[in-house]
Amino acid sequence: MSDTLCPSCNAKVSVKGTPKIGARVQCQSCEAELEVVWLSPLELDWPVDDYEDEYDDEFDSYYGED
Image (cartoon, rainbow, N blue to C red; front, side):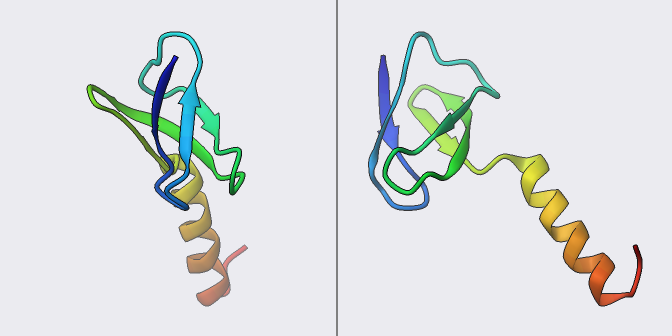
């Protein structure tokens, strides 16, 4: 098991087993959905595809696209 900090709330997040790039985990403190982006040291960040989807939705609503 490996430990790191949540980028959202700075709580300790434990990743069970052997972490792999792209693995999804959830912060037990703030319930943020996170992704393993680096292994040494272990680092988590928000999943890129989730960010892009949110950005695309904002862009579409601003410009009136469906």
